[in-house]
Image (cartoon, rainbow, N blue to C red; front, side, top):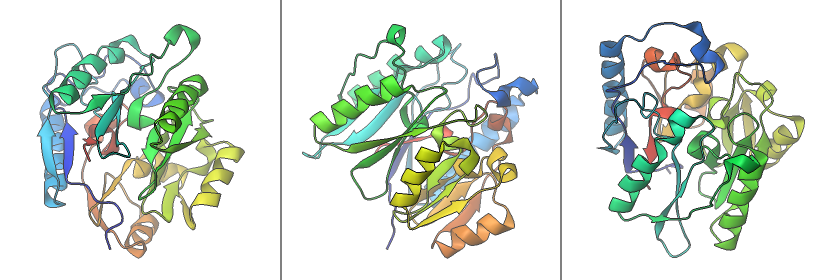
Length: 283
């Protein structure tokens, strides 16, 4: 049985991708981006999804929106109890990223998704950064919601109220405590409905207790592996697509019934993202 199944994914080509300013610790290195290599790596990630049985759809890149390639962050995607697909637009902490959101919202509206607008108020500290911090629990109407560095608890609370009001999902907040792991998707990934990878020091004690109570197997990731974006991998259709897996994690992934697929994302890692950040599932 395939525990995490998807058929369609949205990606944005890296036509204007670069590291322009420091929004997270990975960006502080100042390493220049090899744009030709970035395009090849992005295509390889798309090819990996295609080989896993996923159709890759594309949104046009927009000039001067250098981080638009990280398609996981601009909206949260789900399906309601009536089977209608919906999005929740993000309120991004950085102005340059906030300008990406309308382009994604427009794409989703054109493709039949309804919008649940939370009317988030940045002035009141209500930030929410899509699937960077909001992760569905496989095969359950439940969302894990990271907060602390990009999304805020105020934003998560507003999201929680909307999901519960519409009877879509329950939401469990998880506090992030290490600024290097600024989004939940950098330190935690469900492999199946019963197993997950986690870099424990990135989360509060309360957050870890919540995860341990929900997963039969919570596999600890070393800081070295986490810094190489092992937790930013993507389980899909019996595969686990990632940029790095140590020998120990390779065995964990195989033992959980997934086939590891390694793709190089070194250029995007300079901006603090890898495979998970480069896509948003449409189903």
